[in-house]
Image (cartoon, rainbow, N blue to C red; front, side, top):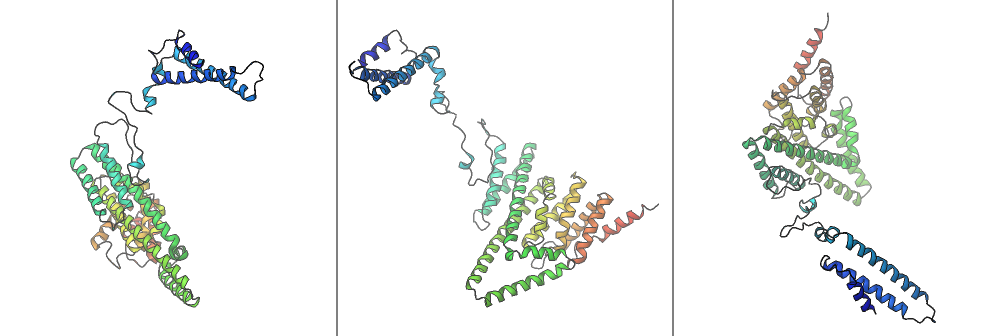
Length: 423
């Protein structure tokens, strides 16, 4: 009976085999046969015999199946098959064109070694594009941030980035120069953030909170002279405590903390050197204004650099000296507010940094040129801003052991300009 019902329904005036796909016909015939079998199973019971709950359920299933068949038949009659089930739907987004497939773009995690690499893939770009160079440089700079400096492939990656940037600059095309600017500017911002976080981490683990006490002491009058003695006293107290308390375990914790501090200092030094290298590349490419703007907003880094490792301080001092020198170039149009922020943030580091006890940070000529650049930048500011900058410099210079930078000429010129205001 089921076979007869299926055949009757298939040939009862509905000849759509020519317009429907094999998949739809298979689904349709399977549904019809299921409904027919259910009806036969229910109707085979005699009239005198009472239906069990299972029979009622089978009958309801049969009715629902037949209703589904009717709905499917209506859709097949009034809507073309190609508009309901397109081949691109069955292929999950691939093109239905024979011989060509538009594969969906790969996720960025499949193209980069780390989630921190911020690469953008342009959909629909079939041919080569100069923007690929920008993505390539950005990729290499991000790799440099993550690779340890001791890796034998680190210098290889540095040389690759140098080569791409230099060749873009030699080409001289406006679009290639803009690619260098954008890639180097983003690399500067990323490395600046990494350096700040590494110094902040180092400060939090430095002698169990001794860094903030050292900062407070340095802020006091003559604090820069007292801070080294307090630091040595702290070492002595820690050694005596570890000996009296007997703590082999305390000594072990101290060694672990020292190892962690050393590794953090190495990472911070690496980021500082990379930042100096990127700054020089920006200067050579004529895009140093990108670094100037970001350096004027790095208040957190300026504060942490006062207590940083001398080698980290050396790189930061060189970056600041380079940027001050670039401010005096005639081709840079830097607002006065940016110049004021640079002076307020980074002049204290010049006074308190370890300027070459272990190795020379700046040569004598570089120091003279930096003083000249600072003097020129100060003279370009409004008189009120000059007062703030020079007052802060005098306070730091008077209590610091360093003799540089000596801005007495700038201070005398400001005093002389103030006297002219007297009627």
